[in-house]
Image (cartoon, rainbow, N blue to C red):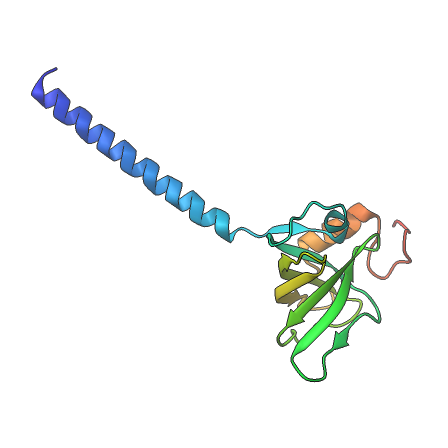
Length: 152
């Protein structure tokens, strides 16, 4: 092989290895920051492993919100009207958080089956619902404000 061809081949191999490394590191970094969305039915079916960072969405079950008297901790149940997930959150809830409203909670499942939220997101007005929560409720055959199990 001639020296100038060997030099060009070396440059091409160096660029290919550099690009492969950069793409690999980027994909690895992104995989650690992706939070998949799960419904309470999927959580109850065991599709989530303890410690896995996920998002859980649904409606806040009526009468399930319990505030701690000593610390800023709240526990509540979110439901898709088929299954329920107990969520514990330490922090200040959004102003629009209330029972009967759609929420999305980000966090991880604990070993005892409780979802420990690091962030709770609530809808911003009465006409909006998270796309994931709406799709989950539609898939379960339930819509907010309708009796359980009734389809539109």
